[in-house]
Length: 354
Image 1: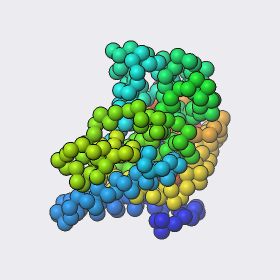
Image 2 (image 1 turned 180 degrees about the vertical axis):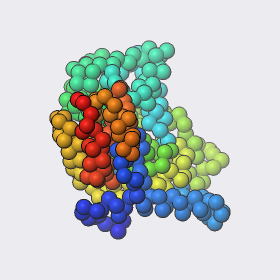
Image 3 (image 1 turned 60 degrees about the horizontal axis):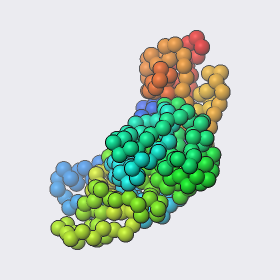
Image 4 (image 1 turned 45 degrees about the vertical axis):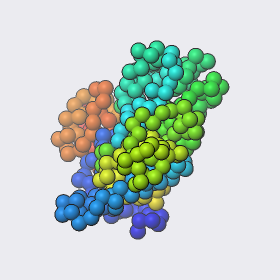
């Protein structure tokens, strides 16, 4: 029952999801739980037949906002909704003073890199360093440090405590891309100035929904460059102006992709009902079983990589869906992954030479 704690048992993923065996690719996109899929198809059917106006879809954006806020331990008034990570970061980057220095890991998804780099004409300098050297690269010259909480290519988890300590010492702003973390890794967004996440991966929503936590000091210094009617204090009385922007982070909202938020609201409700810590334990257990039975060292991430000749072809031939990043097979394990999925992958990979 959605809205109550969801009990876990050996067969519980099968009661809420419908994956074909061998889906180990959530780092590319997540699979919708039945409540989200059913809510989305019902909304699409209403759209198809014109049985309703758009308000029932529109209100789901605020439910999704509240769900994300609960997930990351923030107040909903500090959460803005968008469509992509780069879109959420764009106004933050535009607010950086001329000559700012931004420190970023050298292997970073471009949605958390290009928004800073496009301001080179204003003298904004982007410095890239190895992830483990990120804390040491933060100094008095640094304006902002931007990094992914979980690295998309390797699954490596950032050294958050060290980065935050260095940022606090030098009064540096912190911006985190939680796209590969939110939904399986516990996260307190209020420790950072900015937290952004696309919802179509571990949050298991349709592509087109993204969320951002903005601290008060970021809100105060950032202009809502994409402001439209949804950014107004009273959106439904602001179709034609004058401009009265919301006092909360809603002034950074863009008009929501209705159907994406219909799915996002239901998925976030289920994630919160299950509990992120329980999801993390499930995911990491399966990831570590996969690694150890292949003779690899276990870790603390739901995303892992293996480097064996012919691995991608062997997995594909066995019906296991993964990705290749940097020449290595990337496998990702989420709430609907089962031991049977791991068995299928292991059977394909064990015969291969190391």
